[in-house]
Image (cartoon, rainbow, N blue to C red):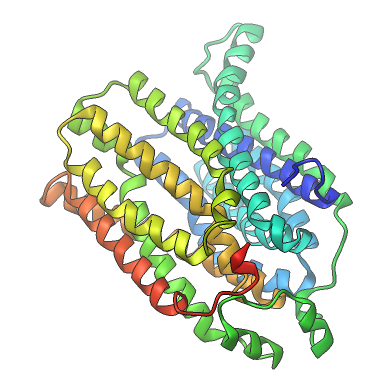
Length: 420
C-alpha cells in the first residue's frame, strides 16, 4: 500500500490524529504538574485525572448516536473546536471547581473524537487499504504522538528561561498546558475541509444500505441491517469480549510501571527509557499489520495474539529476571499494537455503515469500564495476594475474550474482506 496515494480526507484525519497525540502527551505531562504547582494534593490531582475518563464514559454513546444522526464531520468539528477551550480553561484558572469542571468537559469533547475518527477513516478508504490506514493512524497517535512528551517538558523550560522563573513554577507550567490547547486548535482547523457525507441515520432505503460494505463474517447482522433493525446480537458478541479484554489489559497497563519499580527497584530514568522504547518501537511494529492481514483472516490474527499474550503476561509477572520481564513486556506491547488496527477494522466490518458511530461509542464505554475495573481488581490482588496475581488475572481475561470471539465469529465462512 502506498502512503502517498490516499484520499485527501484521510490525510486531514491523520493530521488531526497527530495533533491529538501531541495534545494528549503534552497535557498528560503538564496538567498534573500544573495542579501540583498550585498547591493541590495528590488526592485532588487523582480526581482531576479521572474526570476526563468519566466525561468520556458518559458521553461516548450519545456522541456515537449523534454522529449517526447528524453525520461524522459536524460532531468531529465540535470536538476539535471545544477541546482547546476546555484545555485553556484548565490552564487559566486556579480554582478547584472550575478545573474539575473543565476536565470533565474535556473528556466529553474528547469522546466525540474517539467515536468518529475510526468510522470516518473506514468510510474514506477502500477495503484493501483499510487495515493499513488504521495501522498508520495508530502509529501516528501512539508512536509519533508520544514525542509530545519532549514538547511538554521543553515548553516550560523555555518559558522559564525567557521569563526568568523556575521551570516548575505556576507560570511556566501554565504555558505548558496552554500549549496543549494551542496545538489542539491548530491541528483541528483543517478539518473544515473534510468532505461531508449524508448522516448514517438517513440511509433508510435498501439501495443506500446496500452501498455499505457487508459484514464479512456475520450474515445475520447484514440481513438485520438491511431490514433496518438494530443488530443487538452482533453488538453483544463484540462488546462483551472487548470489555473482558480491556479489564485484562487495564489490570496490567495501568500498574505495570509500579510493578517494575516494586519488583526490580528501578529508578525513574531507566523506567522511562524502557517504556519510551516500547512505545516508539511498538508504534513502528503496528505498521506491519497489513502484511499479516494479507495472509490470515482478521479473526485468526486477533485471537492468536490474545492467546499468545496470556503466557507473556505470566512471564512478565512471575519472572525474577529484569531482562526476561522487559523482553516479555516488549513482545506483549508489540503484539497488542499489531492487532489494534486489525481489531478495529474487524469490529467495524461486522455492522452496516449506519451503526458504526454507535458501535464506536459503545467501544469507548467498554474501554472506560474495563480500564476502571481492571486496575481496581489488580490493585486489590497486588495488595492482598501478591504482585504477580494481577498478571494471572489479566491472562485469564485474555483467554476468555479470545474464546468468546472465536466462538462467535471463528466458524463463519471466509469472505472477500477477510481474505485481504
